[in-house]
Image (cartoon, rainbow, N blue to C red; front, top):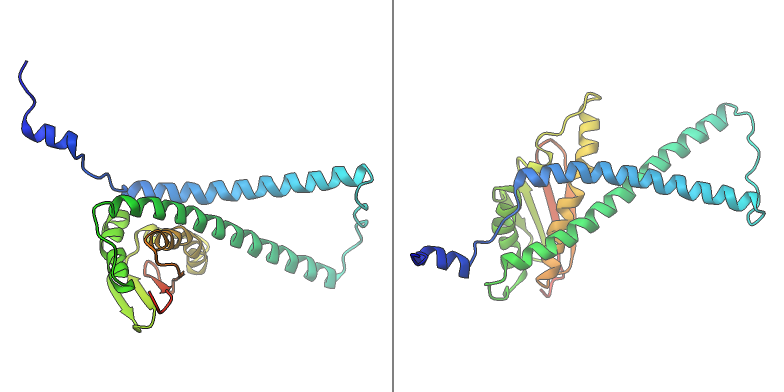
Length: 222
């Protein structure tokens, strides 16, 4: 039996770091949004059923009887549905950001396992713009701006998670969908920064597809 070559032994001793496949991230994000929509609908239906069962058991007052809608009631009902839809979108957005924070925090630990601590926030942001962005989205950030007081603006002119988003309902609907889909990447950035000791806020902004900017606010003393 011949001994294993030195290169094979070196690979076993120090295996290469596996990065995130960009296509996998795209598919995961699509399915995550769809799954959260279904989950939210199921949770709302379950809560409504429990409320009805408690009302039938006398534990809650019965719901008011339905009345005939006039024009004003119809407008109020439509407004209520719109507000409910907005609340549902906001709930999905917050859950996507929470998932992203968990992913970003765990992922940055692998990227930084052989690095020394970051000296200041600018070094951490440069790390995000280069290494984290390349690992997650196959390219570096196109532009980085800062006011040197804890505010950083990262711009990606062709952000991969929203590069293929479109809608038969028009451009505004596509923009609306894109703003939901960038919640997970914003969470990844925030989670990565938090895990390396820089706690702040990350706010994504989209004006034209597929361009996306992320405004990061960190405490001034970091």
